[in-house]
Length: 148
Image (cartoon, rainbow, N blue to C red; front, side, top):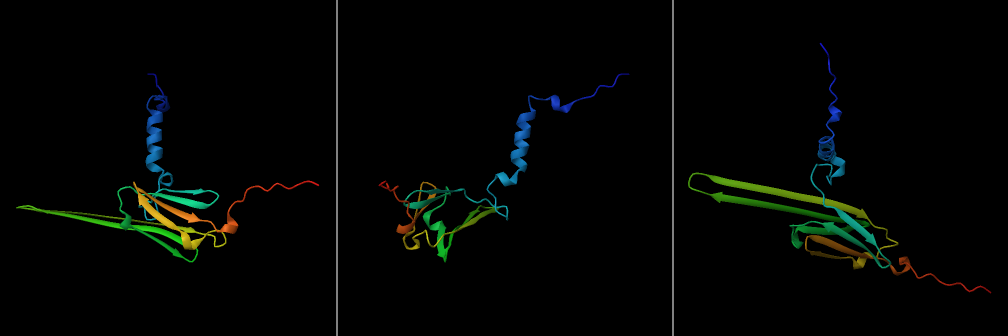
């Protein structure tokens, strides 16, 4: 009788597909999850010469669902949305509810940010904040120094 050793790694046709699937499924750090395992919207922060631009991806929400606060140097963007649906029929009642919330906080530098002129707007599923810089913190054009 001959024993044949089966090498399961020879299934190269399916192996990469399942490896990627398992890696994505089990890699919770790759997703945007908070410590409570709830999803947290992605945030992009861009800096230009005049300001910082913060974009929070939150489709399906309304402007009134957000709360943006500034407490000292701590800028906090939060949202809480609750939905309830109830249907009454002759022999049963169907109730569904959902609750979504998140909170993201950013520490601002007092000497750089003009805290009095922060603006926020929500459109097309994106919350955008414009955080202007103080005049003394704005990037200046390079100055040419004359050589004598």
